[in-house]
Image (cartoon, rainbow, N blue to C red):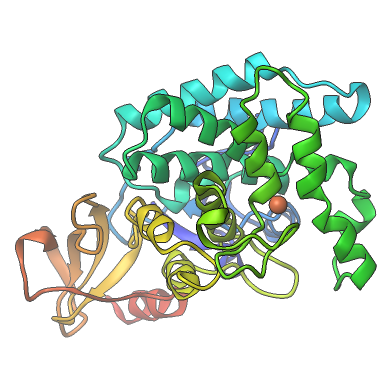
Length: 366
Ligand SMILES: [Fe+2]
């Protein structure tokens, strides 16, 4: 299987991994062949990339997940239910949410050698809920890299999962507005930080520092954030971590005015923001957990050979294990073989192939 961005989907491509709704239902099952209607629906759901079957390029079937699919679906559903419940009955189930955060931490600690693949991240249709879970997972991984103990991971994870809870008080028409916001509307959106803090601090079993994550996650390192314009270390480290995860995850998402960025592009962008908007050490600790060349992506080496990424190593994230499929003169190899780039100092990844380059390669091959 191979990962394809939503804008590159073609008729007849076959889905290799199921796509779930935010309440855990399967929307599109493995084995479905895409027609125009399916592609349109995927776009409508805001899904940014999916896994498709590809017999022509060698198969990669087992993509490791930092958090199991089961937990990810349960967490997304839990957040969805609680946000809705909070709107109607003004209460959330803090115990269930705390238990979920503990589950996620346990899974991440036992999978600490695995990198985040895009596959982990985007198979849901409701942006806010899936985004909250992603931000939680990415933040906890950053915390683990920074050497946090379990108590700190729990405070961080809980605040990260609930960082945008204040959005329930913002008018849906403003939140879902496709075009630019007016100044007044943007000021109203900014209030979600204070609303979130006010909601969370009322619960005895939510640590105050977790509530401060909701309050401070839009503060920026240089003091140009909101609501208070805090700068540098005056912003709590938890909020600095969540800010990085929040920005990174949003970049991977499709927006009406731009396509979704690739992992490589998103990493480049947050690196550029480091030291200006974002805390440098939080940025590098997040990046240490991301697979720059996810399993299933097609890459070209500096030797000119082309292959599919079959494994990645956390110690050397830019040097994956590659199954070579094409020789340097772009001839299909009859017996593909694996190369572990971490064992070679001179062979490096030159680039990821775009969907056009992949289909050109396919058309040129016998
Ligand atoms: Fe936010």
